[in-house]
Image (cartoon, rainbow over all chains, first blue to last red):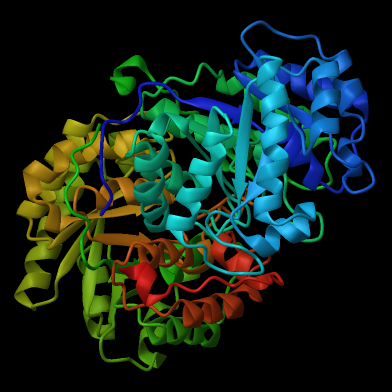
Length: 316
Length: 316
């Protein structure tokens, strides 16, 4: 039985579709297509859009054009455009591209860390300490992802106390937020409660973001559980982009549409206009080679006699 | 912000796949296939399986063989085998078939009631009063569905106070439980809270069941919200069967696998063995002409290096 506090009045959504979504899609998009997608996402009211990653292009070819995408996107006031950076070189490229903030990515599993970034956890934190120092000197805020925080494909379950210690270590590097991430989509609301019971007392709820993949359909229920702790930042991708290219139909990140539909229904402010967001997804749907997994997107594409609208009375 | 009480220690799942699921599938199953499906569902530990419906076969041809299915199913101790009945004739057929309990179906929307059962709400309650009296005289428990309780395809939103009054009227007929049903899958957790705020004080939480369709991906989050009110009975269908045959990919009932995965993670007892349930779905998947929408089922079918297991420690 989780602690239960008041739901937050507003939630900040970090749209990761152009990065975490597209880097896991088999289809490669052109620079123009990415720019249009990002501009439509920002136009829907999203406050944070992760544009891409300054990583090794031979390992993640989908992100090789991130600098060009940054250069071409017409920026909208009210939206922050961010990028993933693995090291000092990535930070320099991100700052040259004019990223409003950057994100580093650590792992809660030693094995996953070694396999994903070729560094153990301790070594990666040393590396990120330098990145954070340089970024903060340049007044560029740094976010941290903590991947495999709910389970690892190699090590299995991860101890929540260990997740909390790593969150604290990342916080000590100067990151403003830790996105505690369910990389493989195994988390359920009971586990969310156990992780937040450890993490929130350590770093404070305002520093916690949650990043879910919807592999087992738990993502929205996990968000609801986290809202009960007062967590007010969630990552999601438009349309639920990001299914593994080797598993057709595999679902990717929590879909932004589904998140917005639920938050609208709870009367929690996101500033996102669902209709505009659905249009952004409709454009990207023509570029990827599978149906978008977002249930709200799918429902919007069918001919329904009843299109629900959240009325002011319902919000009350 | 909903009321929040202790989660129930155990949840009763009403498996509606053979009825609500199959009646909405384009593919017609043979009697043998239905019997195997039902026997596998019961073998997984499900306590209640809705076998079929004694309705007009010209309107719902998929249910025309319900009596034969009842006759052939080898019954398992610990499982109750139930049937939908629209009237006295249906009740008589259900009792002759040996149904352990029956269910009547009213609607919260006048227009839906007229279109679905060709009776207004008041007329349908008069009809069900006779059915309930006869059933209870024969010691056959009666459940009630209240459809379109969260929204109607013709009337739009339904006022929660109206839902509560109808629940009370059904309760007064002698039903032991009212399955408050989101027929078209528009409910979100905020609406669940508003409906339960009205319904629970009227009839008591032990009389409330909830029946969600996962059309917009909200079903599990809705369950989680309802657990916070102490609701301990939920309807679901194996594999998420029941997508509308005219909308390929449309999602049907909340999937039993997804529900069990979440409840297992919360340490809430269901008595259902997920592995056996997945086997039941795997059999039915070969009979319907589309991928089963259950996310947990889909994840189980992929080659995953990490198959999470809910450990005793995690249940704690």
